[in-house]
Image: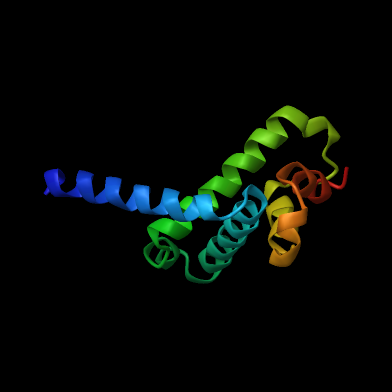
Amino acid sequence: MKSIALPLISLLLCMLAQSAQAASDSERLIQGCRELVSIYAKRGHMRLAAGLTTSVSEALRAGYCRGVLDEFRRNRWEACAVQDWFEQAQKIASEPMDTAPQTTTAELLEQSCEI
């Protein structure tokens, strides 16, 4: 069973990487933060079932958002007016997708931090 799982996971990750490259970094961040907020909203309503209803691709996009936020906050925590990473993710998730091509990831992070 393990010998089948590894190639399958590798194939899935390759497919996700190719589809993620089609989106700009800011689009990827907005999508990822939308997934992250959605997963936590589900978690509040369904508790244990949230993990069961989240797909691998949703989890990867959400993890991307959380990782970017964590790294940004690690380097710029003193400049961030927003104390909670989840609140910051909500602000990024609320950005309209059509603004993503004109907005850089750094601008999204700074706006969400109210810098």
